[in-house]
Image 1 (cartoon, rainbow, N blue to C red):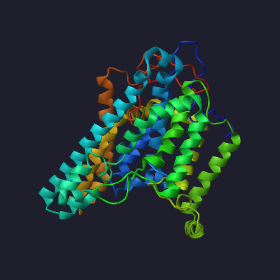
Image 2 (image 1 turned 60 degrees about the horizontal axis):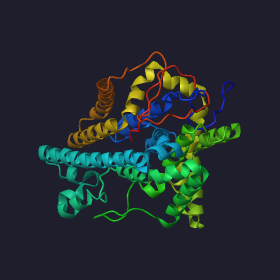
Image 3 (image 1 turned 135 degrees about the vertical axis):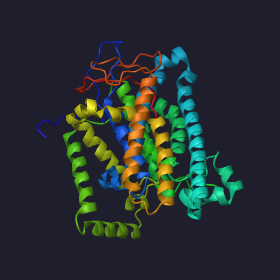
Image 4 (image 1 turned 60 degrees about the vertical axis):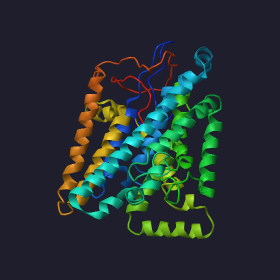
Length: 430
């Protein structure tokens, strides 16, 4: 760790530019979002051996938490400039709000399309195989057995299928993002505290949006998951203003690293997992709220929350991470992250098709080994095609100026990041 130099925030950017000059995009955002997309795809094909290589085997959190964090950072970087006082005075509030709400509407349309694809895939698999269990997979039973109520729930987002339930939470967060950005630009610590407060209240009182016709609430509870998104958002919007939200701290780095080691020991040292789980049970019996004594994903329990934050902070402080993210061999990952919505949607369809095929042919064990790599290769190919369709060079040899897609100048930001490969900035593909 002799080369360890903590940066000033979770995502570091190149050195300060001259006034009016745009700063290049941090390639770690695209690279890590690409990694998260690959892991989400692999985990969405249950029963394959590659699941052991995903982030959830490193601790309590999984790729979903990482993707929420990256999307928050990207949103802060992409949209903040429109909400700055000068931009608001020049262009008005709607110019700032409309891209976020249009993006939320796009996510809603994609959600409807993916839900229809899911029904078609498993309906076709049932027609071909005759296996009735295919009609009850991934929370689809209500639509196939109770279509009147099930089809009402789909468009109002109260009925969501398994593996097709991330985008509704993103849509809600993007609808609320303008208010969060306006607050964060002026009082970022207030936004941060309010977000953590909402997360805590949500866990204490089990707040959630309703399901219909099923009981319970959303699997990705936006009242809880907003906390990860907002942490990314305040990081991004602070960087957009040339500031640092999270402190530069060796102490925080080593505390985060120690927590990651502790979590690994919890999971893999013989006897420790049972011991700590029993202690968590005792705490729960003593009245400690369940968000501190469980690993619940819906309410983003504290062990999961702390794990993804510690992992993000440690990775953000290592200079080698920046170099690896900018390496030419990381280009496929960067392209996956750059075209996040397209890749996520295509990956969802491919993973559901792989699920249906594996369930229809339970004796074809080789499918679990072959389908995930083929799917990842298809997603990488799709990302290359999408990039080529935009006429953008895949791997520029020299830095290019970033372009956030608006007429607003990008405020200069600082903190070192060694990188000769940059990409144009654009609104996040969540």
